[in-house]
Image (cartoon, helix red, strand yellow):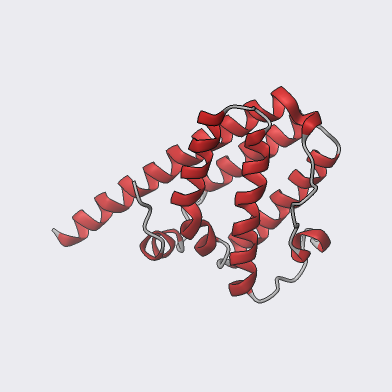
Length: 166
């Protein structure tokens, strides 16, 4: 009985996270397509690991890097969302960032997920520099699909460690 309750709770939590990530992706894709030429990196500090990241690189110590990259993701997503010039959309992105922060930090502590995330963010930054809304949109969707497919053994641990708040 307890096992069934935990499984149901985890399924609900996974669904909430998936829904939030889908909404955030849709909002950011809209913002990118609306106004990517207005995107600026000024004032946005890109973590050193992302600046030098190349696919296949060795990961640094995951603890500190996970928090730094998770915070950067929030700032980057806020900056992208701001391109829409829509206060309601920004408030939604802020809420989603807040609700998924601990989950993203825990996800970045898993080496496989960390590599995937760093690969994606590095490509997204390159797409933003190139002002290519199509590439950026595809990368956001790729990240969402990667997350949906992740049925890896660490998902349950990450959920339990980073309870998603409704």
